Amino acid sequence: AAITTVPVSLRPPGQVVKQRNPISASGEISPELRAMPEKNFTGQHSARRGLGFIVASACFVFLGGFAGARAASPVAKLEGSDLEAAKSKMGWFNQKVLYEAATEIQFTGRTANGFGWDNKQQGVYASPISGAPLFSSEAKYDSGTGWPSFWAPVDSSAILTRMDPKDKAARPDLPRTWRVEVLDRASMTHLGHVFPDGPAPTGKRYCLNAAALWFLPGQAPSGDPLQATLDPDVLEWNEGIKKLLKQESKG
Image (cartoon, rainbow, N blue to C red; front, side, top):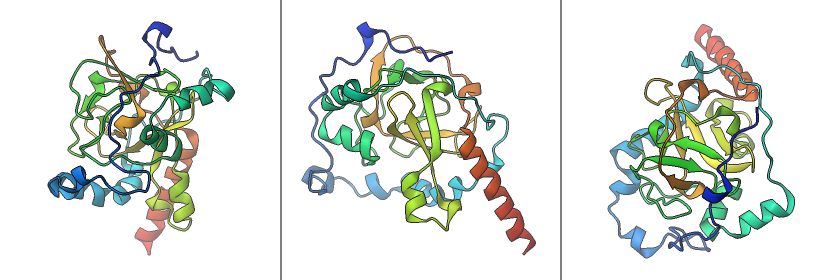
């Protein structure tokens, strides 16, 4: 079945909150952020997670239960003029994240409608482009990384997982260092990445950019661990890593 999209009356109205971008158009970090404590960027939690990214990317082999492949359900694709219209309503930094896979600075993110990365209100996190509901506050948790983190999406058919194209291009001979990218399937816009170091019941950490989300306060659907599945190409890569690790252990 096709995904259930956010009712038109609840969809992002297109007027994003005018927030100061943490990175300027020239790529410079704003003076305000430079003055922030260094621990906000390289603190104990973030340093530990940062070092774990490469290890985590190669460790989906240790996931069980919810790592099965899924048959992609048909979704209402957003294309052409509709896609361009939605894009034009986003701020500069939101577009950098959504369309160029930029990453917001940890502990600073805000959703496209102004809610902080550590928002604790009940509600649904939707795509600011397609309006599709993606993640529930019921599956949100504090990972200590400074980015919104969830252990499962609302509906697995609403997101797409794939090996990060930038990682593949940068390190074609090091597949174990490739991360698993998470996208809104309807608009194919970047959300973040998923790692195998999350809490129960799935063991997954969907590490997302707040700037790639739109928060809708209100009733939140219960978290469903069965939705934390991976696409077939990711599982194929996973099997390849398994074989590689097995060969190395014999060597």
